[in-house]
Structure formats: structure tokens, C-alpha cells
Image 1 (cartoon, helix red, strand yellow):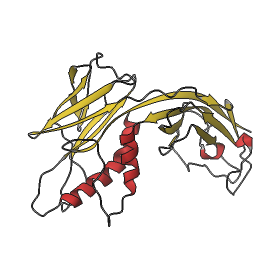
Image 2 (cartoon, one colour):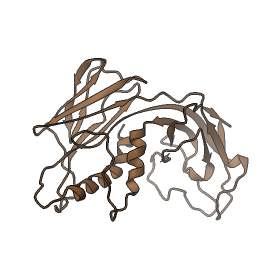
Image 3 (tube, helix red, strand yellow):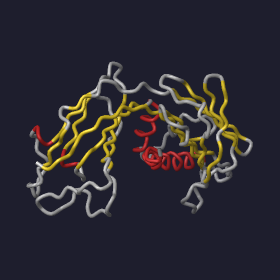
Amino acid sequence: MNTLSKIIGGLLSILIITSCEENNSGTNTDRLVVLEGYLYQGEPVDSIHLTQTVSFESEDTIYTPVTDAQVAIKWNDNQYVLQNIGNGYYSYTGSDLQVIEDNGYAISVQSNGREITSKTTVPKKPKGILLSDNVLYVDTTFSFGPPGNTEDEGITVTWEDPDNDYFFIVIENTDPDAADIVFGNGQFPGGMQPPGRMFRIRSEPFKNNTYTINSRSLEKYGEHMIKVYRVNQEYVDLYENRQQDSRNLTEPLTNVVNGLGIFTAFNYQEAFFLVEKK
């Protein structure tokens, strides 16, 4: 699931810079391990990434992968050792480590004489997903101006949310050969793209149980999938911390002990709809 790793990569860059600025005393050269760890309900554990911070005074712009760490995940009183698969990524190749909703997981990373730890719980899968329609019709005759508010310009997605949780939405087309949407002014919503490019958009985390898919935010015809993700508070905290003002730095938000970064879990439910020309 490299896509969600990319989602938060930029946020972790801000977190790393902030930490280096706060801890820079001119003599402290200790480099912290940065953990990007993601668990997905029902999927293999293959999204654990380790890098090192760099000195704030350093001219380096690439965070060095940690390739020699001992990484293990504890679940159900059992410990599962992960293998280094290159470039700082670690995964578990067996099938006995399962990611199950409502279950708790702890991670331990031993590197350079230091242990960093974290824990998370897999959130519940969103339930009761309903689409107001299964076909979204795109009116391509307009040439300028903001999207309208007519019912045929969007599909409303709703789901159950009794606990007022956080969610985010991912929308992607499922057909690599789907035709591009071209509006009346001859413009592609996503610009000129190479053939076969898959379309994907993602929302920010939000508290609500409804989302409207607007036809003018899409780039492709054909079948699309919408994923409603329920997320944990640690993900929301780090996401919101990305806006931190460098003139008023505070302790960077992280749920990693003795290091930096995030260890969190996701759960989602999906639904499908078609995009057709009106």
C-alpha cells in the first residue's frame, strides 16, 4: 500500500525538520529513527519504512534508509519478526500475522543500540455505505465557471458513524483504458496525461458521515471505486500538525517512543459507481 505511505511522507518531512530545529544545540549529532508504519485490515504487513533524521545543519535532503534494524510486531501475545526487503522497507512474509479490526498491535525497532516502540489498534470497518446513485453523469458542455449545484453533477455517499469518528475518502478509476473526460473548452481536468494513467483523488481527514463526489473533480469515464477509510487519532494529529509555523515551533506530534514518525492502522469499505457522459 505505497499510496498511503506517500500521503503522509510530506507530513513526516515537516515533523523531522521541526524536531531537528528544536533539538539542535550545535553539539547534538544523535540521529533519530523515523518510523512510517501502516497496518491495513485484512492485508499483509508490508508497509513498514525506516529512515534516519539528518542534522538541521546538514545539506542532505534525502533521509537515509535504515536497512540493518531488527523489527518485530507483537500481536496476540506472539512476536513476528519482519524482514528487510530493501531501501528501509520491512515486511512479514508469513500468513500467520493477521491484521484484524479492534485488535491491538505493538512494534519494536532495534537500531544502533536504541529501541523505539509504538502501538496502535485497527479501527472498525465503516458500515452502511450508500450511494445516492450508481451512475454519475458528466456534463462536458460548460467552458468556464465554478461547478454548479444540480443533482446530476454529483453522487452523495453516506455511511454509519455512531461514534463521530474521523474518515477520509479515496476515489480511483478501475479501468486503465478508460477514456479521458474532455470539457467543452477542450481542457482535460487533470491536464495532458500519458495513456493508461490511473486517476486517484483523496480527501483530508474529516468528521462527518457524508461526502459528495462532484463530476467536475473527475478525470476519467468508466468504473470508479470509492473507499471510505476510518482512521485513528494519531493519523489525524500528525496530519493537522503539518501546518505548524516555523516561527512558533512546538513539540512535533508522534506516537513513536524514543523516535519519530507514526505507527497506525486503517480500515475501509468500498463501493463502485460508473462515470458516463451526459
